[in-house]
Length: 76
Image (cartoon, rainbow, N blue to C red; front, side):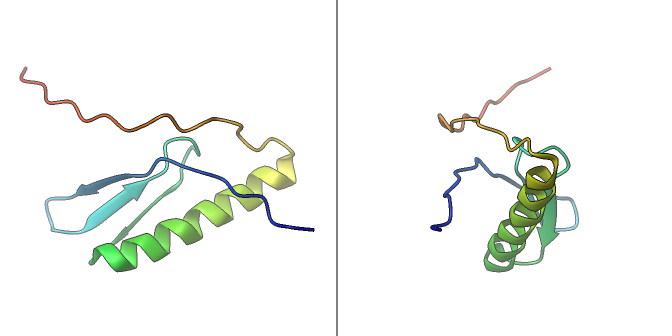
């Protein structure tokens, strides 16, 4: 049986220590960090796969459709 393809928005930030942090907002608790962007890409893919595995075991895979990412700047 062919694998189903999923699309997830991933937010990438850099923390105060210079580490890159990736979060997949559609999957609660799905995040990781790394020293390089290439390492971060590999790690977030692994984190998403693990989160999907957990969700499949619950029979509740999110069916969200990715629309786009938007960056806001806010002065408060």
